[in-house]
Image: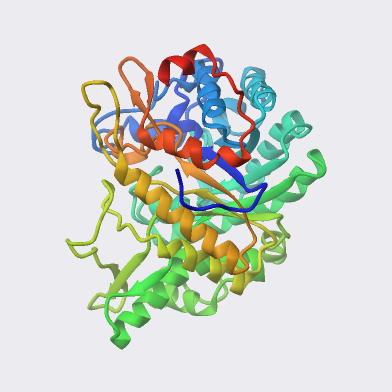
Amino acid sequence: MSRHSLPEGFLWGVATSAFQIEGGAHEDGRGESIWDRFAATPGRIADGSNAVVACDHYHRWREDIELMRWLGVGAYRFSIAWPRILPRGRGRINPAGLDWYDALVDTLLEAGILPFVTLYHWDLPQELQDAGGWGVRETADAFVAYADAVSRRLGDRVRHWTTHNEPWCVAFQGHEVGAQAPGHRDPAESLRAAHHVLLSHGGAVEVLRRNSPGAEVGIVLILAPVSPATESAADRDAARQADGSLNRWYLDPLFRGRYPEDAIEDRVRLGHAQGPALPFVRDGDLRTIATPIDFLGVNYYSRNVVRAAPSGAPTVDPPAPERERTDMGWEVYPRGLYDTLVRVTRDYAPAKIYVTENGAAYTDAADAEGRIADQRRIDYLDAHIAQAGRAIADGVPLAGYFAWSLLDNFEWAHGYAKRFGLFEVDFETQRRRPRDSAHWYRQVVAPNSARDAEPQPLLRRMT
């Protein structure tokens, strides 16, 4: 049981993404995505796996909703697979894809769980990538048409829409360092991709509002405080640079209608941009990007500690060995969530904030009785929820918290080696089994829970 209490009506949820859990990759007209192609490329995925089946959520979604009912969460944040709706990225709509999400939304609502829909969690249709992907402006137009198609079908019931998940990962991880799909290493393309993602967000906001009157519309950013490794002038400037590229490059255009001047200068100095004008930015683009939103989603896992490389550019300084780290190698730093929420509120004043992802990867074996005692995950979640409560007490308009993740899943380039789930998944049998953290989280959300007094048969077996 958490030692913390948050305000009455605070929204507790869990989060997943389509590519990581759905599977059904070749079923019912779904098209190929950039992550299908990336995962099929030898050497891209650490364990050589793919997400053709993943958690088989495409077939087991009713079972997974029962897991959420048992937890008692009030909301489920999930993403829609663009290639399942528009197999070629634009043009012909696949009715079977819309039907599947239609049934998912209806069943969530019947269970008393609010659907929190993310339109893009990195699975760009491959045909759009073949035509230039996020590096070209036409992809932004295709996204707006996709948002229209989905919201015309679901907009009468979905009251919370997120356009994009973590544009920084799309641009930097996918186009600058090549660690994620499409696997490019082109800093100039990364800047164009970031801009077109943000532009597509702004274009989609009004479409979502038109098709889903009264709904909340927002975007999700991965944010983190950036600390210098030392107090030297060089390391402090490296921290400024890293903050500019990770945080302010996205927050400033969304809330201030401009890119940060110092971050542009950094990019020019590194040769990633030719001048402060940023030639891919057209008149009116920044007004579109800065279309007011109803909430900001914040994904937080850890802070960044950086030092200056000989060139002056920032490099990540690994946490000291004695600091606690998750299986991802990320430092456990709960204070960073508080610092991030306070900083965003102070500098950008969003109307509302949700912590849309927060969690930790740990591997803990079941004992002889089948119990999975994952105390480290409980400690991680507990400490971060405490910082969320502290932020609310200090005036942050935080309205909800989503644990990442409901299930173990396909963890992108790591494959199935990293385990974030409240529920363990046996990927050979697809059996779901609650970890201690699932039982703990169930008690945390209990004050706001509308769960049935009597568990369903599936969950009676689990308890």
